[in-house]
Length: 275
Image (cartoon, rainbow, N blue to C red; front, side, top):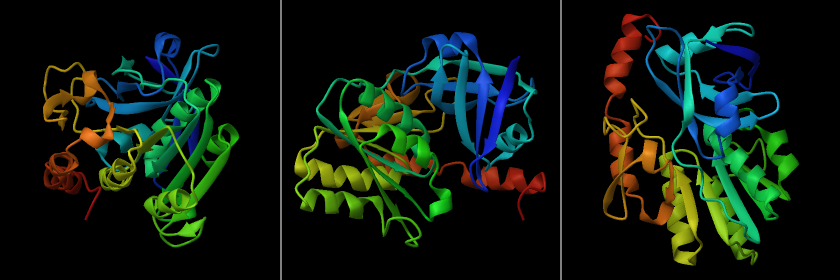
């Protein structure tokens, strides 16, 4: 059993939990993830490691309350426990010392982006970041990101924070202003990462993305998380989740991501969670 030592509501749909998990905290690195079960009858839920504290032996997770299992997780309070908390899983993000980095985060994708930016800053990089969302409220971890970045820019659909538009609009703005970057890290919705990579590929800027396909066992055995990268089949749980964004088949990943939406909707209807 793994105790919840902190819980915070980040907005109406997203929550943060800090879990006491000594082994995971001791071994994890930016880019890796865990799989938890809320209780002994629960399904396996993969969640990115959003932060960790080796001294306190804690791991931070951030999740969006959208389905049955995340609703059950949301019912847990400080002092309660989750049944299983397995990790670290996946490969750590391929972070090497570079001169200047641009992070681009959208929605809950900001959660896995943050520890990578933090690590790159520790490695001596100058770090700029663009954060985006439908509105200001939906952009998470603003203070945390600003604390580790040299410049933080915002783009919202309604203009409530930063420019009115998309993260790609701000990316184009920075490029037009003559900014140069050795590396771009884009994490967010697949359509966002695809759009970013289309721009950076033309500019020949190395770009890493983090993929979150349907995942079950987290060990590469079930094959549910397969993605195509550079024309080859990869498993996000063991070969990733971070990949060269210019080689990812985003159209295939987008199709696969929506495969079970109808079944999940029907399940939630039966439970009275959706109309």
